[in-house]
Image (cartoon, rainbow, N blue to C red; front, top):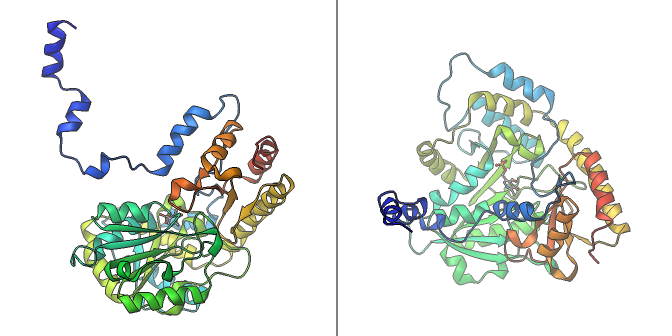
Length: 403
Ligand SMILES: Cc1ncc(COP(=O)(O)O)c(C=O)c1O
């Protein structure tokens, strides 16, 4: 290296040395990585160039958003645009309340117990910020795993202590509050539960929610019940945690899966008015109000109960196709009672190995271990590609070893 070169390096710091010196949240410098970024690296290395990949890894439905919902959005785009309000349009909160009543028989006050969200992902990420920080003895967020990764990300960025509670095949991936020691519950600010469950497709009966509720009342913590898949079911309609009472509870619902509206970013929170009131104070700081024209589309979507039936039929058809095919080739599926995920057992418990073999056949799935402890040994298979792609995937599966 010449002296000139050395000088040049000293006067123009490399991107690496700059990042090393600049202040940065340590969570952005550590080893934790969003599961889909990890998966992208495996994809780059293993997907064959000559085969068109079919992606079963992400829960982003390829179904069309119903026409009447798109029309409601178009009709609501204004000539003059204004900032939307965090509390949302009264008509939207009323439509959400009517849906909760029709779907679960739960009656809530749209003014004090319902709040729209810009998709539930942001609401999930931000919730720990609103409920931790005041009391150093209540610093813990409990997360049953495997789980949607944003529960943990939000808790960690909020500076909370995270307690992971692995679910197990033995219990059908149903959360039992007795599996967490009392001394953890005494420190708990927030518990996340998610039924129907991503990734296993397990459901929780009303008594299961009641047990969680008793524990929350006894120890005085909040329960966030993420019910994103409440409408994606193939037998009896799964219950909401709200059915066992609204005190200590906030339930989260989204149009992403129910109405094939992932791109609209629209959902809502419903439950204990003390927490809704706190969120009304917190959320204006963050800029997460939903645009009014999206809210108009959401009103149309929550007011109609027919299109989710149609969507369920489509997922049901793909589900039956795969269940029959996997049975024929000797692969085992666990849980998978609801949601559009199949939870497939990996031979020898090697979920990353099975994902890699699938990848070589041009099939993308998500290793269960990427979603936390308890997920090892299973692969999550999202039934989101088109029916035609599903048929093509089945012919490729025959060549993948998993017995
Ligand atoms: C369990 C669960 N909760 C919440 C979400 C977030 O959904 P959205 O932000 O689209 O409402 C997802 C998305 O995949 C999910 O799987």
